[in-house]
Length: 122
Image (cartoon, rainbow, N blue to C red):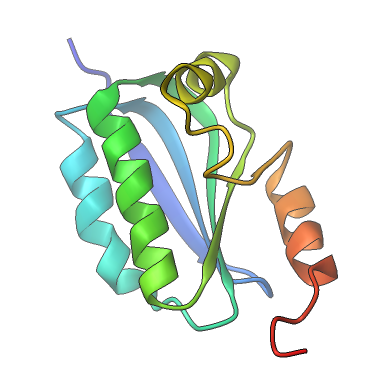
């Protein structure tokens, strides 16, 4: 049985943050995907996905994370993952995605890394 997924979005100086809690699977992934266009991503900003509350993530969930990355890149934004649970990190390593998503221990660390990144205009 699928546990309910909750997500909360907020805006920081770096950009949009989505906090996911529960199970990200074929039942719940569509609601995350549907929320992506409404985030109002801006060029030069960052989309941070806080995965610290995930209790489960299947291949459909991974596909949604890739869709979020593609959405951010299409908006000329970057993406970062925060608080990635070990089981999700293991999946990333097994399928070769560990270098596709910058990861940070917290959303604050992701925002700090965004602030210290070199300006691509230079």
